[in-house]
Image (cartoon, rainbow, N blue to C red; front, side, top):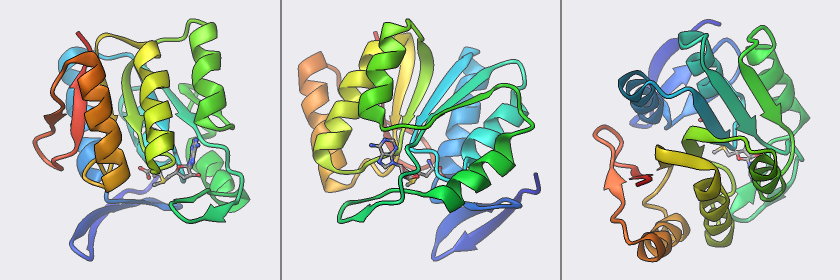
Length: 192
Ligand SMILES: C[S@@+](CC[C@H](N)C(=O)[O-])C[C@H]1O[C@@H](n2cnc3c(N)ncnc32)[C@H](O)[C@@H]1O
C-alpha cells in the first residue's frame, strides 16, 4: 500500500492507495509508540472506515493481531454516518493480503459482548465509531470489560461534547483521571 503524508485544512492526512486517514495520523503514531513500548499484541479499532489505520499497523507489526468493528451499513443520520459498501470494498482492498487482520462487520453494541463471551481480550482499543454520547458510553463500557490490565483505551475526537461527557462519566465510575496523549491531545485510560 502506498502511503503519502499530506496536510489538509491544518489536519495531518495519510493518503493511502485507496481511502484516507483524516485527523487520525497523530493517533496512528501514538498507537505505534504504545505497541512498541509495551509490546502490545492485540489491537481493536471500533469504526474502521477505509481500514487505513489498521492496515498500516498490521503491516508494521506482522506478528501481532489487529481487529476492526464496523457495520458498513450505509446509513446517514445526524451525529453518526455509517460507512457503506464502497468503504467496505476499500477496507478489503487495503487489508485482504494481511493475515493478521480481522473485521467484525456489525455494530459495536453487538460485537463487544460477543468478544467478551468468546473471551477475546485486547491490549489497545481505539474508539472511533458512533460519536454520540450514548454510543460512546456503550463502547467504553463494552471495551473496558475486554481490555487487559495495563491495557489502553484510547479515544479519537475526545474533545467533542458527547465523547468528553462519556469519558468524564467513565472516569468517575472507575476513579481514574483520563490522560492525554502527547501529540494529538486525545484522551486515554490505562487500566489498572
Ligand atoms: C470517523 S470514521 C473512523 C475512521 C477510522 N478509525 C480511521 O482512522 O480512518 C467512523 C466509522 O465508525 C463507523 N461506525 C459508526 N457507528 C458504529 C457502530 N455503532 N459500531 C461500529 N462502527 C461504527 C462508521 O461506519 C465509520 O466507518
